[in-house]
Length: 269
Image (cartoon, rainbow, N blue to C red):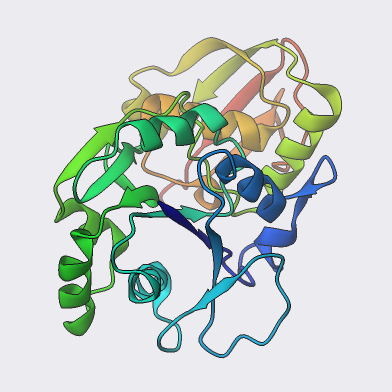
């Protein structure tokens, strides 16, 4: 097996190269490499077709401009069509060594993947693709169909559950970076929080209020936890949060016995 790390480049929401973001003095790219090394030393970084930068590992260039993650996988199979490829995004800071070992130990023919806890759909950006997947991949790319989730659903899959609900959390917003940095600095401290849900959120949660014991450090971390818990259909940018009846930003630290309100947009403003 060989591994391909999707380094992502500059993220529009983060405003910087996510692979170089640091948590506890370790970049996301360094952490990802460390997770993979016990499974294979054959690790490559997926880069743009015209990339000229220096990288800490060998690279595989996209075969064309801006092909998306499936273009990276296509280039990997072009590099070695007989190998299975672990394709993994670099922005999964809660993925554990046990998760990757589980993928490695349960490899199937086309693809071995996790079911995303948020929607129970197969997750394409942390999966092992067998050589047999390349035929389907080349066909859909030739038809300019580049949705990674549709591609993985077209394959014969071994589907696994990650070790914990946030194992596949994408670090795609600055607020979540603050959450993870605070957890790294102060550890996971349990808090008892009262959460109030309004409008659509109360319908999806099937409750207007609940008490929750959490180790989240900030409002953003708490929102991600309950979003997975209740399968909320709205994401963080579409929600307002209040702490003890005061609107607060997402990086606000949580305290024991806080009362948090989560509110979706209301009709009429």
